[in-house]
Image 1 (spheres, rainbow, N blue to C red):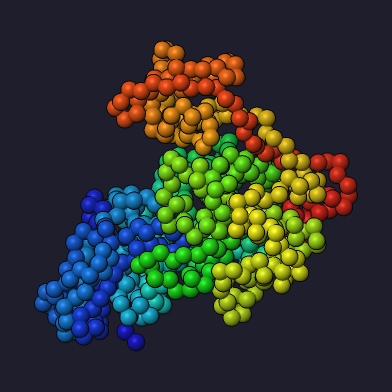
Image 2 (cartoon, rainbow, N blue to C red; image 1 turned 180 degrees about the horizontal axis):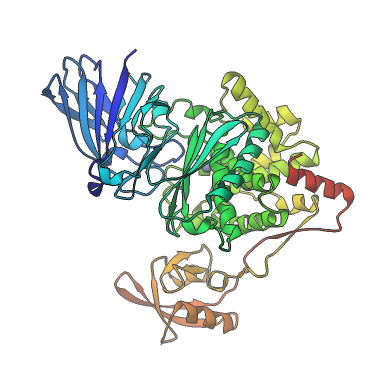
Amino acid sequence: MSSIKYQVSLHAPQTHLFEIQCTITHPAPNGQVFSLPAWIPGSYLVRDFARHIVSISATASGKVIALTKLDKNTWQSAPCSGALILSYQVYAYDLSVRTAYLDHQRAYFNGTSLFMRIADQDHLACEVSIEAPAKSFKHWQVATTMPAIKVNKSGYGSYRAANYAELIDFPVEIGELTIGEFKAGGVPHRIVISGKHQADIKRITSDLKTLCDYHIRFFGKAPFKRYDFLLYAAADNQYGGLEHSNSTSLICPRSWLPVKNETVDESCYQDFLGLCSHEYFHAWHVKRIRPQVFADPDLGREAYTRLLWVFEGFTAYYDTLALVRSGLMSQEEYLKSLSKDITRFLRTPGRKIQALNESSFDTWIKLYKPDENTPNAQISYYLKGSLVALAIDLTLRLKGRALDEIMHSLWKRYSQDKQLVEEHEIQSLIQQVTGQNLSKLFKQCVHGTEDPPLKNLFSKFGITFEPDKADINVLRESLGLLLANESETRISNVFSGGAAERSGLAAGDVLLALDNLKLTAKSLKDIVKKKMEGSKFLIHFFRRDELITCELVKETKALESCDLKIKADAKPETIALREAWFKGS
Ligand SMILES: [Zn+2]
């Protein structure tokens, strides 16, 4: 059977242009239709990758073939005889793990950015040939889990994917790479780091092995023959990950990575391990076990599901829990991290507005398109989803069952006959597997906007849930606003029902003076702290270029927060429950 051939050339990194040649041996007789996806699986935003196509042309048997654009992402060639060759340039200068990047430092791409999908031929095998760039890049190497057909020692040469869906599931990293190798569950794994860094690869490799061994034991078997963590070590404000079936693309601050003979910020390093854990868990949960609507989604349009709270929320729950269970994080550190999440949740007024399943359904227009009103109107299905997963787990554990059983059952169904998850199935699956009816919890917390009953649940596990007295934000509490940063007086958020909203202030306003004296971020905080409750301030501010005044009143509304602590003097049976949860037994 013939295959679709793609040739990738990166000979001019300074232009940030990938040159692609795509050969279709048997184009459709009436003209071949082809397109680039609008979105990439795992990231639910229409990105219209075709916007980065700079120029495109086609030939067949040496003759130019006319191309007609059918819609924003789709073209059609004129009928031709012989193989059709498409030649196009893709602009790639976005650090995101969802797109593509090319400069003198590195090349990175996802197939969704570079490879045209050939209509009615996407079942065909795809061959990708990656050409070596100029000699000055002789230290560059290619890293991908796409199966190689014939490559040189740097990894340049040809690769093969079974079909288009697989082709776009193999991100490719090219550059000066630091590679750590290990085996987990008997399967070869690599951590591949690009970007400027001094990371202690030995420690990272060893910790990832511990983590991967844990996840493989949890599910029983690795679902892949090899796995790569492709990490770009970046500046402090960069963070992200995208799951794939046999690899993951990650980006995180290089300052999070341990460096030999330097003090390690363990909490940041645990965030890095948590990111790895999250994407790795996805290799089972969302890449294989997945919503029915993701079986073979049309990447030209949105694929709607109310189940992302199960796929992202459960994954977010297990990502950090796996660190405790595998010994990479202490129980106290875990409770601290959980306390932070619960506090963030309790301080999101939008949790009372948007139901969890709606957050999933509307991700295309809401979660992935946040704005200044997001905290007032939305709740993240990652955050609430992970807390509902926790509530489900603790509820089941009180009855001698566990959420782990649901994961094992989902995996068993998938590995036996590739069974995916129907939209309304999770609640009944829990009942079927554990005999527990959680309809009340689902009605209140999944279909509704109530908070999961964590305080009550934790009390039964010998864990106290108290307010965090140290975590006070005076501007948020007393004025109902947040500033963009420590050095500016620009308002980033105004919270529903707060003093700032009542006074007429809005996100984007720049505060200038309080009671006719110039303001700084620090002086505003100091003054508000000192003044009595009910004090009135005359505020001068700019909205766009208009100078406006208003009266702002100090009206403190205590913010909710959470500080979880292990109760040392709990009863032995309570301690046993708690330990079983921490240990996953
Ligand atoms: Zn995820």
